Image (cartoon, rainbow, N blue to C red; front, top):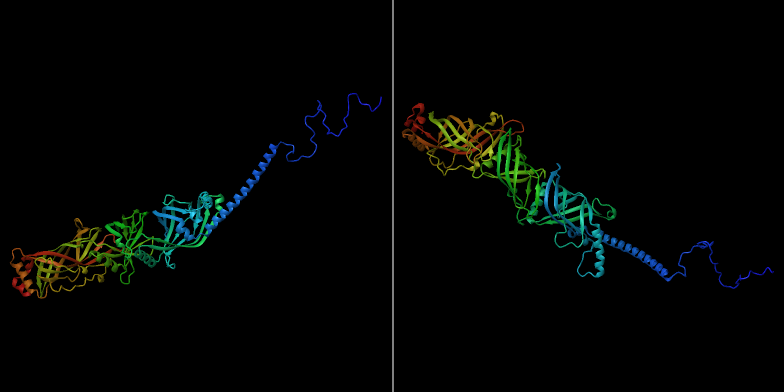
Length: 636
């Protein structure tokens, strides 16, 4: 047996063919050997479908990455392009063409700061055409590429939505005169909505209500010069200057990427023109043209003089602006008189009112202020003009515009008020004394204040200066209305202050049938009591004063008229009627009229015209002297 022999039936193939794995047996592992290195990639012998799928996924990834990079670069270019346009845009161009403001539709005056500031809430509509600023609004004739490019910009504007604006104080000056300020305006941070491709109407504007602090100038001359010029031109022309304006993307409370968009501008100036004033070319009318006093009432109460009034305010601005105005305080001044400064006369305030286009009704209340010691001249001129039916000059000042006093008129009553009514001399007696004659009796009269003046008064003295007529006073005879005057004195009045009114010259020529002149040497003490007021009358008091031995002077060249009158008295069965006409002065205490020194005041009204009658009988003419006709004629 040889060792090289093989078992029968087992033959070894020694050829060069690839070794084959032995057939698996029951003891073979389930997985093949894992020895060797791992390689990515596709097995060359893998199916073609897998290779194609891998290739496409790789292509999609590369293309997507490229597109993202391109889109990012494109957006960066677009953002910087539009931002560059927004930054380079002129602020004045933005204000004039992109910023659209309509209104104000309503103005609410909230309050005053006490140092000349006025808080208002301005209601209006506002919008910012950001498409105009960025140049992305649709324009007829745009190509497809231009329209696509602008569409991206409009989409960005819609994504941004709004911007926040923070402005420094706005200085307002007359156009062409930056050296004189009219006011400064302070605004809180604002939100402005952005719009691209806005419609031609105003439907895209957003309603806003913005609180505004306005500080008008205290330079009255500059303000009045500007008002007169604006009225004459019919247009308000001002220049608004802003030192700094900061614009930030998004609303005031927004965060995120929008807040990184920031634009700042400095030294912004723009012109504002408002053409809504009527009658261009006309001079500015007086304030009395715009405010009409319909009625007033001055009444004594609790040692003060209270004022209530109703007036009509005419809005000269031709617009549909509605303004809600709270109570406004005013001080009424009397104009300077000689070297005396303006005198504060009254403090009044309006009730809250709504200012609309056209006429607005105002209700006012107030009090008379304590009169200073130097108020006599100004108050005399004011009351004298009023009682003489002449509009009296006054000045108005409001705390909204301190130190700005607007001249206007206090309307006089029409017809001219008559203070003395129903003047009579009761129990008049005439008797000779030496080479002259004296008269005695009791003067009776009603003192009637003009309607609307219901103050408590006490007439303490009177001073008549009158002519006596044979018969009633001719109707054609009238005294000069300019003779009326008022004098105000502090009380108690010293004897030196009780000088009688100056004697006016006798009429030239003398009135027909006037024959005598009666003028006392001193004031006559008077007694007064409340009287009954008639329709159209203010306070009424009945006054009486005794005339005791007052000289009766026969007028020059009227001895015959006097003799004829005496004849009627002596031979007439009912005596004779004598007409009385002249001027009187009365001194009154006014209840509640305040003075700075705390004392009661006395007012003297001089030059009050009056007419009356008296019937003189034989007993009144002769009296206890048993004076006969010849004696009377001899004296004449």
